[in-house]
Image 1 (cartoon, one colour):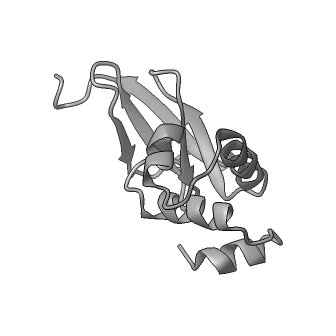
Image 2: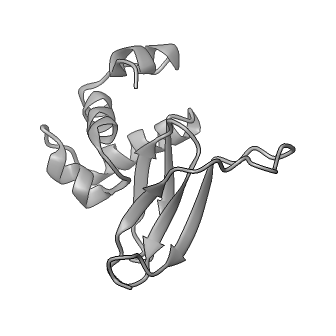
Length: 123
């Protein structure tokens, strides 16, 4: 991902400490994170309302996407490229899967796919 400040600037979003902190946590993440995980990684104090207000702005600007997991929590990630997520029904682990989502679907634009089942570790 390009510099967080440039990303915000290119989307005409004012740079704030909270916005920058959220985006850096999401940028460094290897998988989608929920609110509690993001909050634990933030280097600043931030209340829940501030977090969700900024996440909503990022979603509106197509910077961040979210999905609900089996544990009824919302997970967030920076939109880098379209990909699928696998959610394990047993351990609730989330795995980003890299395969071509647009294969044989030329007339569609697919941003994300959610697959559910049992992961190889739990099988």
